[in-house]
Length: 458
Image (cartoon, rainbow, N blue to C red; front, top):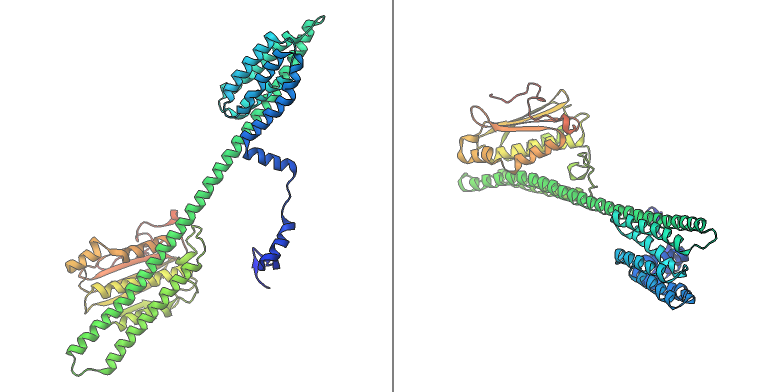
């Protein structure tokens, strides 16, 4: 197939720099002259005003000189302020009205320079945000049309000429004002669209940052679970080996070999899982907020009873007695994310037993399925909360382990409860649906989904 870019085959022009210029040159769009002029005018508005003012003075200003020096001065006074019409539209409107009033007094005929008044009306309508000022410009234009009709009309049909001239100039003024107002509205809409686009872009960037942060948090939680469990097993095995080396008579090489084999197997497994988490994090697609995708969703569907028993065996190798009660079909037709969460709950719970329950504790793991829910219970008969330090770990400050388990289940619509057992020890009850629930359907506690499983000893 060959290399591709954006779904298209990679051409020779992309592979070699010299040929790429030859290939890209015919593909370059050629803009029309009008489009280029429009682009230049938008990029250089002040230079455009200066150029327009100079050209108008050379044409209409000099033509107005044919009516006499007074007409030339009035025409020049009407045209030159157009150079700053965008910067000071209201001031230019007032100046233009004054120049027109002087013209009505000293010049008995219309001048070519009177086109400047129409440009001023357009400028105010197009560039002034204040509606009263825009309406003032329209009113001044209509009043000027009436006064011009009265001043420039001639007998014998004086009143008919006045009406004709006033109506013609009034309609022309309204059209110019309406065009300017439409241009202003278009510019306002374009500005609003640009602002909306900027807000959408910022929202997209914030969403990407949120997804990236969420992926980092999930990866950190996964690595915490993996490392905490593996190091606990390693520490227990190492402490046991150290004690046996100092006190056991004689030293049993077979027992030592099993200890070191367990340590090595646990470390290699932890390293493999950490690499898997990092690989998933690198390859994760942006999350859509549905709870799927990203590092929360493990790859592969081979998570089930076999993996659960392997997990329990690794804990047993660390010296903890664990009983498992799980039906072989408990994970049938269950999404991978749910299976993954259940295994993480069991592993973190057994890790806590290893760390806090004491050297002679036993644990009991129950994984059952009832009424569309998977119920998990991990309980131990160790010292639990009867020790002050264990009380702090389990109750006052539950640590990142329990928080991580609750967060994992909450994302899937499940719940978790943990606390001391009556008679000693500690118990963790968790419930997760076989499918991810919507936020409105998620329970607040185990009372709803437990189906009578309850907390032991209560």
